[in-house]
Amino acid sequence: MKSIGLITVIVCGALLIYYAMDFPNFGDGTSPANTYLSPHFLENTMVDAHVPNSVTTILADYRGYDTMYETTVVLTAGLACFFLLRRRESTSPPARFYRHVPTGLTLRIEEGGKLPAENSKVFTRIDSMWAPDSLIIKNTCRLVIAFVQLFALYVVAHGHYSPGGGFQGGVLMGSSIILFSISNDLRRTLKRFKEKTAAVLGAVGVLIYSGTGFVCLLMGEHFLNYGALSSILGTDKVMARSHGIFSVEIGVAFAVMSVMIWIYYNLSSAGKHDEGL
Amino acid sequence: MEQIVTAIGAKYNYIVYVILMMIGLYAMIVKSNLVKKIIGMNIFQTSIILFYVSTAYKTGKTIPIVPYQGHDAVHAADYINPLPHVLMLTAIVVSVATLGVALSLAMKIYRQYGTLEEDDINENLRSEEGK
Image (cartoon, rainbow over all chains, first blue to last red; front, top):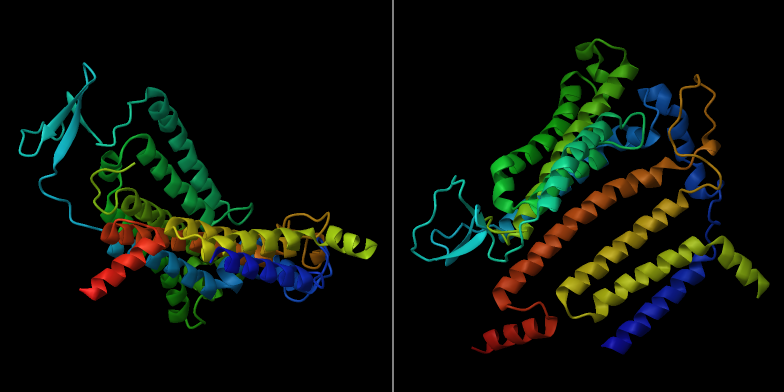
């Protein structure tokens, strides 16, 4: 098996490199990929949508359908993880571990034992794969998370003028919640950002995207032709496209953020949502 | 010989992507552990992303953010190609999503059979059929 695999890989690689030698040079501005369609996008991005970042214009306007279904794919992946892994929490776990905060002692409470109150300040529940309580990690993450979230909002809002947009901002926002979950624990994260919230926000994101397209349809234009929003927004058609792109980016950010968190919840706890990273 | 060397020097981006892609393909064919296969799949996807982004590059040109200069002052040759970046931007996010689905499938398999080795899973399946 190993030798067959190696031969296949070497033959494929040699063929690919052989034919790659007919491709245009690296950094060639006149190659076919750089000549036909992309100059049109670059020259018309300001004229059509008044968005300097042509990547954003292509993503949300010229190729709006593509991005809409990519967002749907992301949501579907979150749903797939949920349906594959999610299990109902067992009502009586075999053993639970608690830390007595004033002394730092760890207690192991067997099945059927008397558990401390859920919101007790003296005992905190810890995972059975116990990790030491680290003040440095917790406080560093507490400081960093706020700035990561602020930067995520900046990246979403400035997708028109600088590199960024819904996908990047959504990933940053999701990773800030995941950072919180890694530095603290899964139960505390689930109290702040519930699984239901993640699921609903993911669907809301896709709804914002397709809803923007549908409003355009209702205004008598093509689906996702944001120029139709001009009468609602009270601007000219070019600025209406810019605002339409922004609303679509917000939808993408919602969907990507919540699906990232949702997949993380299900993967890190194997679908049980009681103990995780 | 000299021609080959200059050709390789001008097209090294393709060689890098082929090498990365073959590492991923090798892992997917040969490795019997499912998580290693998934890692191979991810390396494969990364190589495609690298290939697309490298085709967009133009030597000495700037990022495709066009400042407002009036209607006819934009020279497309001064900016790198934005289209492959858009395609890969969505591909990166979708590759994260497919990675999540692949890992949860692997987890489900581990829960069912207690192993991630392909041979052991096959043996398990055969002995179940024999019953």
